[in-house]
Amino acid sequence: MTRPPRPSRRTALLCALTAGAATLLPAPPAQATAAPTPTPASIRFGACPDSVPRPAAPETVECGLLDVPLNWENPTDAGPRLRIAVSRVRASRTAAERRGILLVNPGGPGGSGLPYAVTKRAKLPESVRRAYDVIGFDPRGTGLSSPLDCGAMGGLFDGDRPGADPVPVGPRAESAYLRSLHALADDCAAGVGEDALPYFSTGQTARDMDAVRAALGEPRTSFLGVSYGSYLGAAYAARFPYRVGKMVLDSVVGPWDWYDFDVVQSRALLRQRDTFFAWTAQHPDHFGLGDSAGAVRTAYLRVRAGLTDAPVDGFGAAAFDRAVYRALGRTERWAGLADGLRTYLRDGTPGSLRPAAALDSPDSRTFEAANRTVKCADGPGPTPARILADLRRTHRLDPQPVLTGMEGSACAFWHHRPARRTALGSPAAPPVLLIASAYDPVTPIEGARELRRLLPGSRLVTLDGDYSHGVFASRGNTCVDSTAAAYLVDGQVPATDVRCAGPGLPVVTGP
Image (cartoon, rainbow, N blue to C red; front, side, top):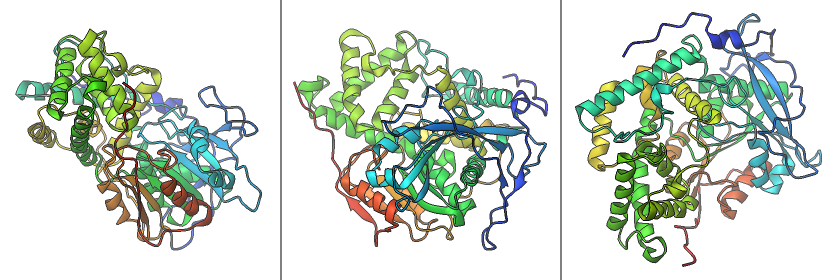
């Protein structure tokens, strides 16, 4: 494949960044290792864009922009800068009840956090809403914070063609798979700019978080991070351990290279899919896909094979796998997945399998571009040989795996190759509360157990008998929510790890 011309040192993205002056904060405590952080101007809050929902009256949400340097390691006055979009819903409290700010992040990398201050706050326990100003923000490269665009991304946004299968089998298909990853990396280098690629990293975003804290005049950052947000929180704790207030890391990403995490996730998805097959088989009259896990699997493979051979309006094998990936992560989506399989077998249409939002929508394009750019900026990527070896190993485990979450594979061909992984956790940070679902396939629980080793004194809250991604103020579990609320509001760190009884598999009602 022909490589595109190398972008000039002043790429289109860098030219779009704003320039501004910065002064230095007072130095951090002597025992802290973080470098001084330039102080931005105070955030001027005002009306929010239409993408941010309005909270229930009398509460209000306000939004603003914060200038930060593109490169926090060299934050010169004349250097390129980014603008970070920030939202705030103030605490509904008395002065005595207020505990400061609670930054929130919904995950990704690539997820927009600006509306999350409203949507997540509405689900938080009342004591937390009364105690904290909830702060949302779009991490750099996402949403309204200098959103990234990788162009075609190696054809990622093309509709599925007849016969095209995202799972490569055999030397010719494997070579084509590697070429598509190479093309994706080339597109990001051209779209983002080679000079800018290193600075859309989790480490740089952690510095942005501390700039938000400084701009709001707060001495500490309390933080709630879900999924990738847990990785971001752990990076903040590594860089600014003495500025951490309370930190809840929910559905924890393990402290591994991103590609290694993707491999762990891909194997967990196979286990979850088998659980889905067995659950569906328990309700043959309701779903009509068979009364054994094997029969349901056969029906599943018939649907996938049919969509591979003859995509429906561009909805083929890759789109099907994306729908399965999304559904397996939340048990409340399982019935919709089973119904979609039945609908296709009955009338040949994807039905509920087809997502409401198109992959090539502007928000999806930004997400996919930011996801790869951040992952590949956070640490070393795999070799092409390693990718093929893992593909073959996964294929031996199951002839029809789901590879949708293997975004880190593109890092094998990335134009910027960081030598070190993003630092996570610190023994100097205060105790952190880690929360995990026992059978979450998106962020398997072993990741939480590994990250806890890097955060001494922290506790793990496990929701037993649960198979979904996202737990605190999400699953409606009183044990989890009350434990996290007591920690956030009153600083109550459990004496030991906590195990909460979960809901088990979904209950099917009706005919």
